[in-house]
Length: 170
Image 1 (tube, rainbow, N blue to C red):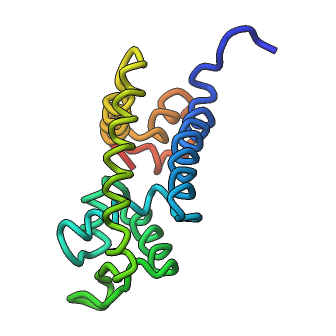
Image 2 (image 1 turned 60 degrees about the vertical axis):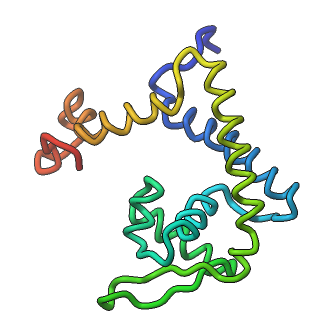
């Protein structure tokens, strides 16, 4: 076993572990609040809908800083849990999410949890040599400029077919 901590070769694995630790503990708080199975990714969507009213999946993705696919998956899980309903949008492809009365009844506790989680995250970041949220923003911006796939192609061109070696983000 190596004596040094893992470096970039395990970056994805370590980031998933960090996210599991963060999300797992927030999910435990939801269980403590009597909301077993409630996922941390639900709260930003519910709070966005509460603040701005019914919204399309695309608008929710933008409001919560996730991909359209991630927002769509979260909204589907919220619908399954009875926390949102979906209606057709202006065209057949668009779906509009609406909070249910059940979700609205949770807003007080979700707002309190969100404020507490934000305060705890600020304290957590104060223990670090560099704010994690700022580093995540920088990492996302860097990958937006040049995807990881392109970066791999730069160092190992034989691994990525020439048609997939675009100059920018994928």
